[in-house]
Image (cartoon, rainbow, N blue to C red; front, side):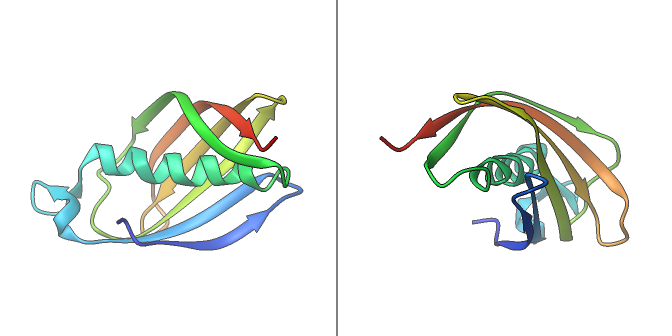
Length: 119
């Protein structure tokens, strides 16, 4: 729905960088992306950073997520970076950042996720 593209994945660093081309359909106040969509983009990048840690990870379910809005996130191309800060067998702690086309940091996020593994 949000038109994500994977830009970089680094399994050693446990990071995932994605790009999103966000139209005004996802905005309020003319061109400011609605906060729920900003959080969804952060959640996607942070969760995908977990998937690169091991081949047996089936999914990641967010248990808690926090988004901090630093600047208005405007429609257009956005780069979202997610990384795993710490992980155990069943729980992962992640952080993420949203940058606009000019490279301005517009939002940050942190989450705790339940790691679900294949049997």
